[in-house]
Amino acid sequence: MTPADLSRTVLHAVRRAVDEDALRAPVPARVRVERTRPGGSGDYACAVALQLAGDAGLPALEVARILRERVAAEPGVGRVEITGPGFLSFTLDAPAESDRAVLAAVREQGLAYGHGDALRDEIHQFHYAREVRAAVTAQAVFRLLLAQGARGRTTCEQAPDPDWVRLGVTVDAYGTPPVPLTEIRPVPAGATAGELLERLGPDAARWGLLRAAGHDRAALGPELLVQGEANGLFRVRYAHARARALTRGATLLGFTSEPAEPAEDVQDAAYDRAARPLLDFIADHPGVLLAGARHRAPDRVARQLEAVAHAFFDFHDSCPPLPAGDEKPSAAHRARLALAEAAGTVLAGGLSLLGIRAPEHL
Image 1 (spheres, helix red, strand yellow):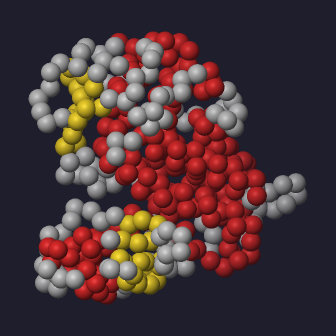
Image 2 (cartoon, rainbow, N blue to C red):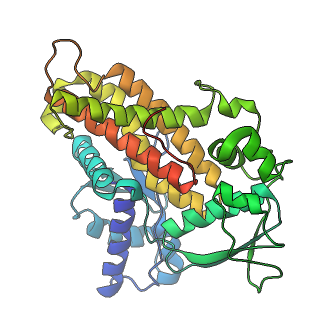
């Protein structure tokens, strides 16, 4: 069960409780679950009982008890506890089973892994100045919102710069817009689109404009073109290209990927140690995309991709997915390849939402 699955499961439990008249409160549009903080109980926690208590006219602990019995019976949920004033804490089934569900979701959904309909009831209009960073940021935010089911359009104060097209920016309209609207006004780039394209090209320029939070100045120097670890964009794209190369290499060796069975995890102790951070980042990816959309923060997605790439290389170096020398492909290699491929898919999907290409060869 992924975090997104757990969120839907809790929301379903709320609906059931309301339908069965065990709880009289409006059903929220979405339910947020978060990883338990250090020292906490379980894998994830949720404050929905505290949110519903006022409308339900019940103590939060009573609301939590009503929801606990409905969530605990769901497949994938191992244990549900009530902590503090009414928090629900969830312990998922055996990690191996949960991990297989995450990898299966990535394989099934492909580049759309992490997309959803949590914001399907929202309509937005983003308005921005005739400035390249504002235009690129507004377009990236719009992509993130569309990926979560929202609708809307973007408008510019003046006729758009023709060079914006080369940066992948489209403008629905310009001039004085109707209200309501949301203004996108990051710290200006200090350069025009044409200047950035000449110095950096479209991909590096977009990464530089989006990687920093909107209230920070964007780093748009020659370091964005350096092919080395210090360049976050290069590291992300290199990790993706390496993941794709592993798939090609496995094909030449005559084997394909297959997520590890629980029993196989025990036999591959190196996988068990090195895979955990990468699996966790992949499982958290849908939540990061949703948070990036809600907070109008594509920089969160860029940082997530950097974290996935870093964890990928740590995993790759500790657990080579391809056999070496005369070594024969084994179940361990198939499991390692499955995780590497999932990482590559997450990286490509995230870059796509930022409007950046993910080449298979660097």
